[in-house]
Length: 327
Image (cartoon, rainbow, N blue to C red):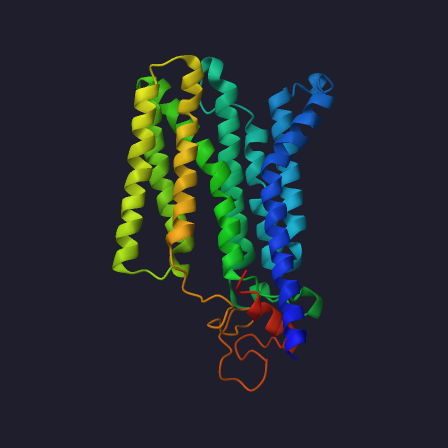
């Protein structure tokens, strides 16, 4: 019996880990494939007045949407509501393709602004997809879930949090540059002041989103809260000072200036992951069984049938979903 459980748990954990790795691989892979595709068709779209960058964004958005859905489709309960909402939110990355222009006339930096806008769209789309697939719950989900084929194991919340965290990566880059360009071009800030201001604003937004994503998983105490505040102050202050000191240097060092925010965000994420104590103990001993369809708590029941929605998985399916809470 123990071997059977370990086999199920090993399969579930490995399966989710592979999906997460595939999702991370898309971050460098999608731009590379889209660039190759747009370069291979250079000049072929001229009769339709589609510039290369717009075509690049179309290819990147298509690959992102197709690949992410293909990776996670087996752990999504595909109800009628989720199908329609998935189709709707999947239009978000294509907004920049349909609009195809910078938000305002920024001169020679218009392509950089368009790329930043597209990155914001990718991040927002990932967050919207996470909400639709695993966080949005309504009774019976428009009553299109009676078939056993539509049942999927409940995805561990730890995996959902990591997928939501992936959305931060493109979004914070895009928001940082859009905000920096806006402060410099529209409000007359100097280069250094504009990007320091942009960094502070985006750092604050990153802090709020990151803490919100992981709030329920962390065992908060006074010590942990103070440590988080101290770490946040370092995130806000040190890269900002670096940008101010380097902004008047040569062009090569100016390029380093834009790497400082990335280093700050990376250290913040790594530090919180390292030092935040998580509520669930290793091995998943404190994870309680929940309904795979509606997340109803099943403790105390003599069978696997959910009194809330009527779903009745097998013991193996319920064990796999429960054990998979620990990634």
